Length: 408
Image (cartoon, rainbow, N blue to C red; front, side, top):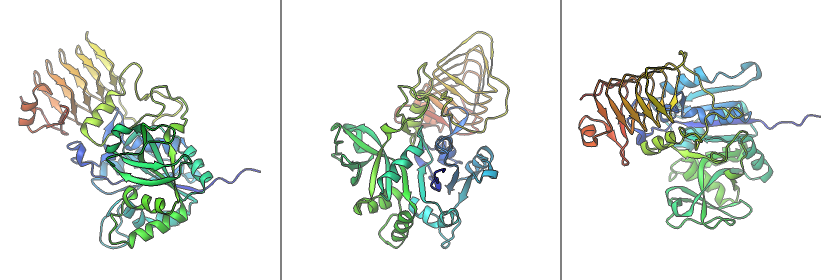
């Protein structure tokens, strides 16, 4: 007799403003920011869920959600015959004329999703991190534990752990305390110089989550945040465990990217994660065919290289035309055009960027439809970049917003 599979609803929290990624989030939600040439940030969590055979997913949106809603609706069309779906759910003000007050409130205001689907378990994941994960393994651990809540934790060096929300757990993985950026992070029972950082990914037993959300909604002191309020409720009740990301086995993983996870919430982190893609043996391997990252590819011809030049350690998307130029450690989105004698290094060029002859782009991020005229420079003189209104990150990454023609 076939085993009865548990009913699971996945909720992806995709309503963040992404202020630290400005100007890339000037007119798009953070999960809609392009990544890796052809993807959006949200494609990584949705691919993990789909590859894990979790195919009933609601994406909760709020801020500047048009491009995100369109991408999810167009790219993520599941088999309706089998009852599968990925659907964007905007803030609906079902409980009165107010927007989401926090991530927990977003789910509470969307309780109709849980009531309609009637799941046994609810998966609640963030929308804007770069990683691979077989979520079914975390779900199995959650079911076996008998706990109401499971939090995914990634091991980080204890000396760096003060930058994260930290999970203090015992040898049995039961969570003793949930600490927000502690000055003295606790070590792990099996590795004193490491700590568990929360990945912002949770699995709940349905009834336990519903009760916790209701109790939170009645608390006037609560911030209505999943990590700040809901998880501590489960911890205080002794009803939470940590799931060690190191134990997750993803088919096709390499030795380098077996437990890769990056929060790309800042310009510097976003740029660094792109640089992880481009080496011969990348820190994160986009070419894993056993656990692919899915998206909707732009319909464009193959990339074309014209005249002699060099292109080393670079991802080149479809529709690009590159004419006798030097490119190094760069990610090119679809339909980028680079003219003769230009130089581009350690940069991210999004869709339809044009680089003129003799132009230089150094350690920069150029959003869609940016034009760098012949002989112009970006990322070479940071003071000049700032004077032209461009953002320059703490580590010296210059960001040019969407649709700008770079002045000299």
